[in-house]
Image 1 (cartoon, helix red, strand yellow):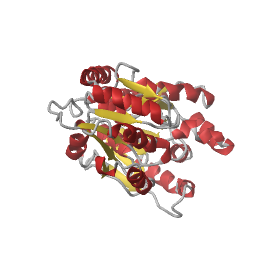
Image 2: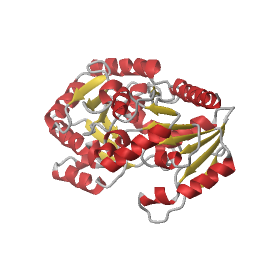
Image 3: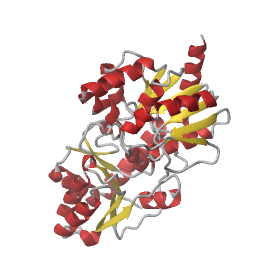
Image 4: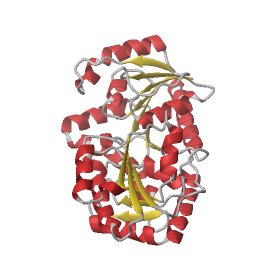
Length: 359
């Protein structure tokens, strides 16, 4: 199969799909994206042009994408993110076309009538549709009556494994997040500040970067916990995996405190569970699907510092609870979010979509 992926190559998640699909022996993979992100050696990349540096560039690249498709002559196009690359793919007029909805494109964009009309049109032209979570699948009913395939964004359980050696000297609480408002890192810091004096052996580690980094660092100083908070910055697991897994695997507790329903899956939470780390998560979007309450982790209300602090304290104080929840999380990932099985699901969707188009 000759496959074209239209997607943001600057996204660590799209990179992971690209790397996985490219390793399937029967696939010749081409990627059309803006010029950024990790590149894999067995993939042919085609760069889009930045005319304005705004979302207008998606419209201005329509004719270039059409020309590239005519040149590549693929068996199928797979567009990731319905409102940007999905729009581009739908306007090529090429079939068969698979579109994957991710989160904000399905939950936030339809609030704008123009964007909703664009989405409905894109899905009307799609021959196959996939999403990452049940909650997104349910939301898709507002945009299309076509069959929607649930294909989770799992993890490689041979790489994300429980770490056998952890220090009892320090309890490490960690998160992997873009430092933007929707991801609620502020509330993790505030919750940590409430328990850090009572439990001086605790440390908070934040992996990620973003527009709020400076203000979050200042918040740590204002709350008097800056010496107990480590900002690691952005670590790309696709080109610095050993560093990434060493940091993640050292955590005793993982937190993912998004505040919006557009957090439809929570990949980092699945990675933490695969490493047998208990997870504190907010009751938003798809997080309650990924984290089983009181089994693989603890669910709290978004923006609720008190509930967050209480959850942290429970896991800090109870090592057995941490270990039990971590073990349950690992078993859940093995059962539902095994990356090799998820990739096989996507390849099957490609094959079925191509076969149906030939009929």
